[in-house]
Figure (spheres, rainbow, N blue to C red):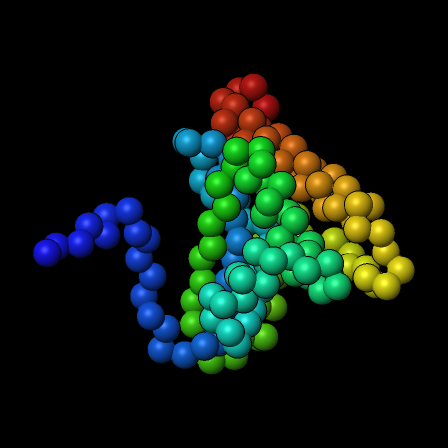
Length: 151
């Protein structure tokens, strides 16, 4: 009996656990994906599970997980690109530096102390930050698509 797996996505099994990854959102069907977060992990794509649970006591997990949920609630698909790395921390810094020259990243939103912070306030800060990223990309796309004579 043949099993239909056509609805499944494919992921190559890793050679090693250490990765550098970039999370991106897709602003529209004709647009390129926009990076919004860079990370590194020794748990390979298992790190994404931390973002899915978005535990408030882990500031980065909550920040990234909440940002992903918020983008998805706006109908914006979120993707992950990753590569295996022999020196994940150094490579993360390189990718961060390169992307920061063009994009604002969630990495730059300050974390919080979960023992003193209020969950709803932190959620609203993340949403406001993401709204700023979306607006900045909308402006960047509009300017880059204008004819040179209009600039």
